[in-house]
Length: 78
Image (cartoon, rainbow, N blue to C red):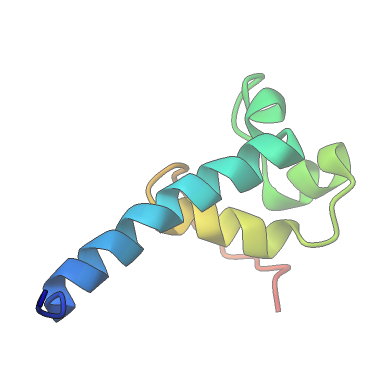
């Protein structure tokens, strides 16, 4: 009979999934196509992509080191 996987093994597999989802979200939005022109503010991205949920999607990609977020002192995400 096989033993149950360790918590570290489970965590490693879970952590491996999130960057793929973050990349998929960015590709699905066209985020990387828009950003190919250069850095943009969150507000400019929202306008360019016509995306209501852009804050959450950019947090996801930034959290997985796919995009780098630089604080501006202004937050439109609540």
